[in-house]
Image 1 (cartoon, rainbow, N blue to C red):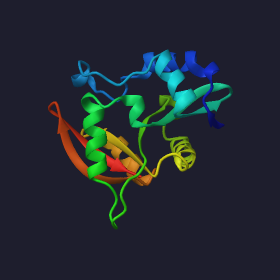
Image 2: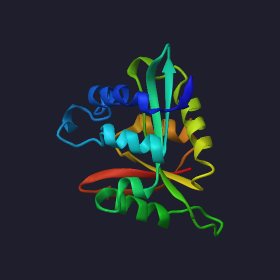
Image 3: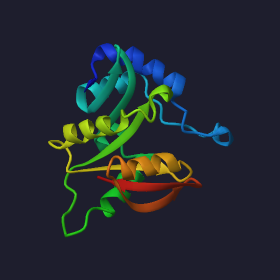
Image 4: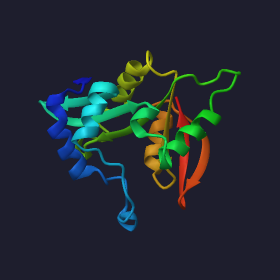
Length: 174
């Protein structure tokens, strides 16, 4: 079941972040920082942004989020990311009016490859239509699996490649 996250989900989401928040990093990258959310960030996502969860037998097994630039702030990596995404906007002379940042999206290891990602991201994209005209995300260069699934299953388009603090990222738009 895919649904909007509620305040009652916060403790489970925080526990998932603590347990699996660095899953995408391989052994050689354990010193890198992953974007991890705490109670305050999850509360903001639920109350002011878009956060969906997939639950099986009452347990959250996946989540996906989209947020405005306001959520991330204009400083540091996200400020540069939003600026770059706006410059890489769609063709045909259409300017991005309302840009949102898609992700992270997370699926429990036991449920990966079991058909949760595609309906979860489709539901998220649908929930975002009224708020954002374009969603942007970034995927680390070495995370080939994530890049492939976002292009093939989520229908996102790679529009740029950039480096930030010595690490390469693909920029994708939907």
